[in-house]
Image 1 (spheres, rainbow, N blue to C red):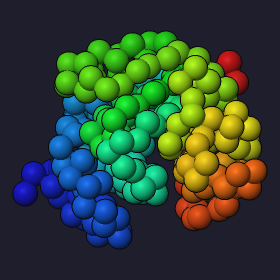
Image 2 (image 1 turned 90 degrees about the vertical axis):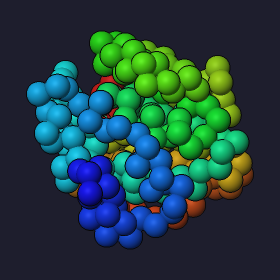
Image 3 (image 1 turned 180 degrees about the horizontal axis):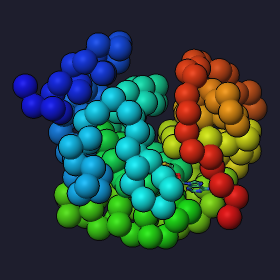
Image 4 (image 1 turned 120 degrees about the vertical axis):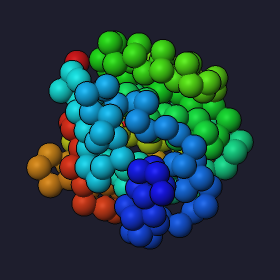
Length: 204
Ligand code: SAH
């Protein structure tokens, strides 16, 4: 078994992420290509890994949980906030029609862009800016994934979601909660939560 297959069996399937499409995507995306050279040996380990600029690539289980929670369809257009190294972006791009990814640190966005292009993910559009505002130009989105913890759910993200669209976002300071939210007209329903630890969504 490769380290990647072992990651999927032990950390993902073993913790009840069962959506076959999500498991297949995690099997296709080479996580080791998204971490710095010096951290390659840790690419499939059960924890976040530093990617420079004080940021980390999310733990594999968290990527899997968030991806499954989005209930993605191949036709979807997805907004991602916090491109980071581009790994979660690639998992999304493997599963849906189009991914729009916003990152506040220009150097990370550029590196991720080069990497995604080199690996053949042609359905990703990137933007450097503050994800609190979403990316209004391409709204509405079928799904939105936020990869850094917000103080509260930013209203523009809910506005930029289609009706019945799903938003996955970590909220809180020291005690963070990942919230899976679904928009129904003017109402937002809470579908699920998970206790998590993300880097903060900064206000540049
Ligand atoms: N999914 C990414 C997670 C990276 S960590 C990965 O697996 O690599 C969270 C990312 O959110 C960091 O790259 C950080 O720079 C970015 N970020 C923080 N605040 C932000 C903001 N206001 N707008 C956009 N991106 C932000």
